[in-house]
Amino acid sequence: MRLLIIEDEEDMREALCYGLRKLGYAVDSSGDGAEAAQLCYINHYDLVVLDLNLPGMDGMEVLRHIQSQENPTKVLILSARSELTDKIAGLDGGASDYLTKPFHFQELEARIRMLLRRSFTQADAALMWGGLCLDTNARTASCNGIPLELTMREFAILEYLMMHMGRPVSAEELMEHVWDSEADPFSNQVKVYISVIRRKLLAVTKDEIIRNIRGAGYLIGGEEKKC
Image (cartoon, rainbow, N blue to C red; front, side, top):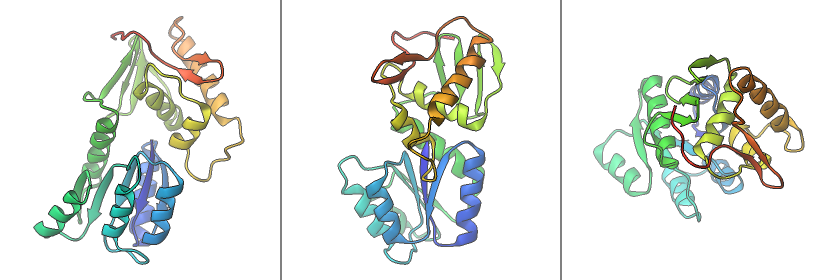
């Protein structure tokens, strides 16, 4: 999943980016409201974490900009503004959640997971197909009961494919949602990672979990199966 962190305090912004990247998220960041609004216009993010006290453009103005788009991204406001009126204004303005500073990173992480599940109409923390199971809370995977040793990037690719089970996902879409803005869109990284994931799956199952759909992308799913 690809996130945008909008936070003007550099130390806080870098800490959030570091912690979320360690969890396997692709993360872009900005410390300026006007720049952040432009990033939201150019890129499609799965979630925006938004501070309200920003230079260039106030956070509420950034929120209005996001909400004006055809398919607005979900927004989690993370702000020192703790008055009830601020929370009501943020939620009424279209934010999906509001967390006040100071905060525990574990709570932020849990709220991000919850909002991402809601984005993909996924109620359960476990994603399952055939013998493949992903626990999106613990960030662990298994196939036929055997743990899979996946890197964060490999887990993120599988997670995105399983959140879109039943439809092909192109390499370009995977690059957009699993890699950050530093990624080279002309590289063959997706193909390489898919090959590695398949090799790990084939070590524990004979089933073809990830299928290539010519001209469309990579597909997991069809008729639902249970672990």
